[in-house]
Image (cartoon, rainbow, N blue to C red; front, side, top):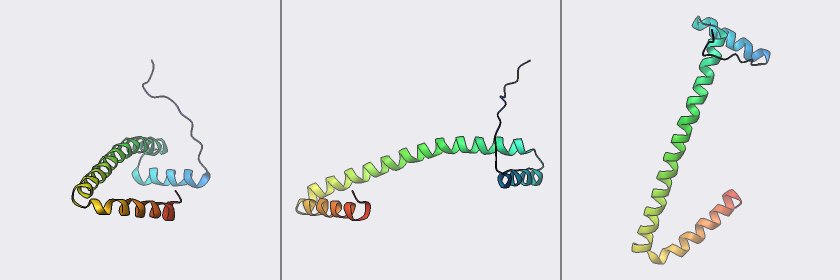
Length: 96
């Protein structure tokens, strides 16, 4: 009879292994349970991060578009100066 779980070997340095064993003892479970929970948390976090990144990108694009429209319509005389200052700061702080 086949089980739905697959076997996986993980090598940890001694300090990490001891921490896993101590945590398992404190939670009254096995080290394997701790490692499975850590893997599950990591995988779930990756999906959250991706959703979070998409949300931040959307907010960022919205803000940029809104500001650009406001500046073009209400303060067109400042647009070139703002773009030049943005480029200067980009180079100063990010080397780009």
